[in-house]
Amino acid sequence: MVSIRRWSVLLGLLGGLWNCSAPNPNVRVERLPDGLLRVKGPLAGPFKRTEELAAKACEIMTGQPGAANGTYGFEYCALHYYSGAVDGFFLSYLSDIGGEKGGGKKYCRMPLSIDDAEHPDAIILGGAHSHPHNRQFSREDLSVGAQWRPTRIFDQRSGRIFDRELLMLYRERTGECRAYGYNSATRVVSALRGGQWTPIGQVYSDDGDIRLLNGQDWLP
Image (cartoon, rainbow, N blue to C red):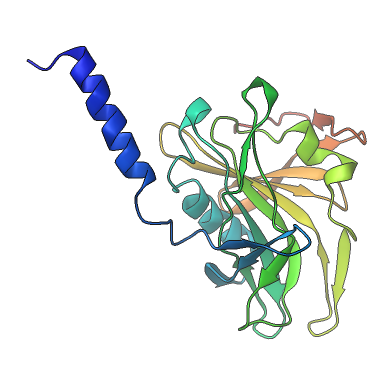
């Protein structure tokens, strides 16, 4: 019989081997001379609809090592963007640069630029991040200070107008993926349900306070 102490040592060694394993091929982020982060792209796409993008992003980002480990997990960040040349939406590669704030809150630093030589006309529509143990946006996520500017963009090539949007992705213990979007222009929070965006809340303060719509909640 192996003693508890020996099991502890074995688990520690396995953890060390895990940490020394090959780099995650889906994480491709670099820090620029000014300190800002840039990610490569695309990791996934093109998609014709943002609903398709969000569903795929949820599967990819919450499926990364540690992304769904609850209080012991951590966040991944990415960018989602549009190319008028192909009339499609894309997800960038991921960033794992972040850590933990007070109270056990996880965070990742959002990249602010994209390196995609195949789509030089890329328009960044916003960020995407996973939550390891919370299916709700934080107040900081929904605050005015965290918004991308401008909140609405006109693409001359396609003639389309886009609202900037923050995606938040969470995997339930049952394995189900949940995707949420926060529209920075309208300040409406939506949940992806049945392949469609369903508005569930309205942000009403600069600090990111949200009022759920009648009959709506974070879970269907």
